[in-house]
Length: 70
Image (tube, rainbow, N blue to C red; front, side, top):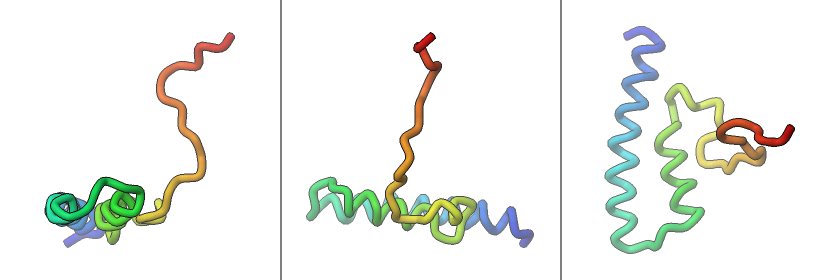
């Protein structure tokens, strides 16, 4: 399997694992930052998002939409 295909396969596999993990954990845990970090780590490990530091919070703000300041 080529490297991009393997990364895509890992990404899909991680999504299923993340979904199942979230369902299981939400039965006993309330949504919290630690749970979101766990799910983020599951989603991006060994996939195309690996360079995004799986499980770590982003420390830079992103803007969505157009800048309305002139």
